[in-house]
Length: 145
Image (cartoon, rainbow, N blue to C red; front, side):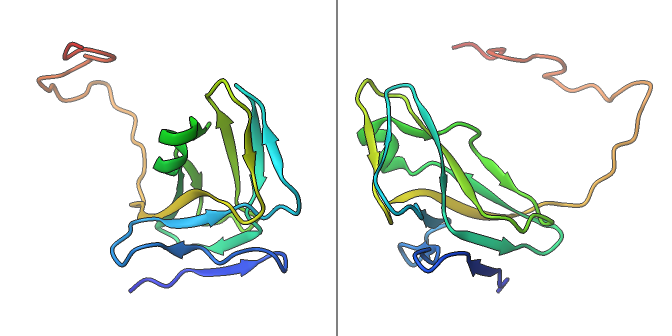
C-alpha cells in the first residue's frame, strides 16, 4: 500500500477521508472560518488547509463531488486539477457556481475529492512522421454526436 504523507496547515483543517471502504477519492473539506458565498456564474479559490508529499511518479487529481454538481451546479474550473509530486503548498480548490442561485460554502464542507494516480516518467522525442491509426487526426466530434 502506498502511503502519502500529509500536513494540516491549520488547527481547523480536516484530514482527507475515504467515505466508503472502496472509494477512489479522498474527500477534501473547506478550511474556512466563515461562510463563503459564491454568486451565480462566480468562482472562489477555497483553501483546504492540507499539503501533501507525493512520491515521484504520482500525482493527485482534484475532482468535483458529484452531489454538489447534481444538486447545486457546483464544479471545479480546472477539473481535474493536478497536484504534482514536487508541490508542497496548500491544496486549494477553484469552485465554480454554474447555477442561477448563490451557493454557500460552510466551514468544514466537503468540496472536492482527491484521487492519487500513477504517472509514468516519459520523454518526448521529436519525429518526422507518426504511425497511422484508424482515427488519425479525427478530433472533436469525429465519431458523431
